[in-house]
Length: 292
Image 1 (cartoon, one colour):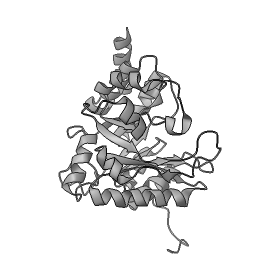
Image 2 (cartoon, one colour):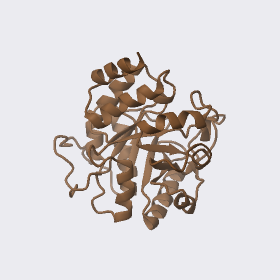
Image 3 (cartoon, one colour):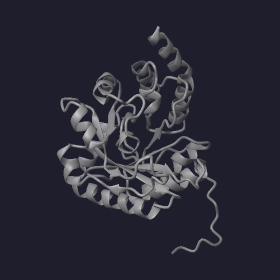
Image 4 (cartoon, rainbow, N blue to C red):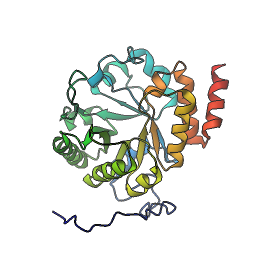
């Protein structure tokens, strides 16, 4: 084990310097991957903007029927034109999403206890890679608990999914979950995102925080920012704008889309920030015009 005595805390993230190993490919850290991996990543991340609008509707795997997602068969089709990547469970995808859709698929492959249990950190790998192949998934999403009781199990789940993905050229999305004992600070997210990136994931989903540009600089794969709890629309768009300005390559606003009274217009506004360079104020003006 490396000796931790006397280690300096890194200060110089050189946030103004672009990622060095891009090599002409539009997805950060993917320059040395094989053709199949790059094809899946291109399905997720737009080649022109380099970004993605991801829509997670996998909340039911531990929350059951979630407000705003009671009828997946009605919610998903109306939002589909405005997102790039659908993130869901195999059950929801097979029953509620038409296979005729042209969107990328992020397949949730980890699962665990329900909200009735106080500790959600003890998850297992619930989906075989063979089923991910059958579903033509563009990536496999694994919840990764850093600083929680189930951290070792979580990292074991992640490593097994990464290994399977490498065998069959399917990227892995490491979804950073915040342990109960950890604060949502840049110190924690620098630790968590770097750990999962060095494990071998091709992308990370995490939360926005102060000094976010340093978190991005220290992580050698693209970061997609999770929206977290439902916010007022103008605040959610500000979060989206700051995330993209801070170097995120995508947004997964989840509840800030499906729990909005005007979910379609909210998805359109987020897309303007992610792909068209809108500011938060411009996107909010677009949203207000769209709903009136």
